[in-house]
Length: 160
Image 1 (cartoon, rainbow, N blue to C red):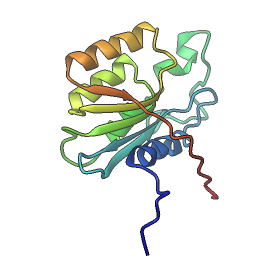
Image 2 (image 1 turned 180 degrees about the horizontal axis):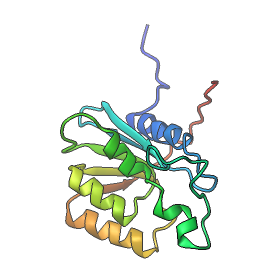
Image 3 (image 1 turned 90 degrees about the vertical axis):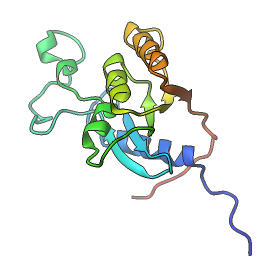
């Protein structure tokens, strides 16, 4: 008997974990997930966008517009930073990060400082914003390779 041929690739697996992590986000507008992987394809950490521990998502605002104090942007921790902060091992030097949305400039700084060297992203819908343009500039300067994820078109169904 031969092994089955329809198993998912490493990229499908890890991006799938990033999307599954994104499904944990309680943000009513944007759910983003991240999965950090070692050089030998072991999952090191995961994260999604949400409020910091101890900050109730029932008490802090989810608004996107209005008084900045009453909008989510001052309070939300992005998925990439959450994944980096959730890691309890040693160094992330040389690791890869799979993200469902291209990182902002603040997350790019954390990625660079943590030693992650490869970034695989699914969506780049904010490519023309100053934050993402600055992010790409820093990632390139620091030698972090960013690669668009190429979907296989395969569909997987999870029955939970």
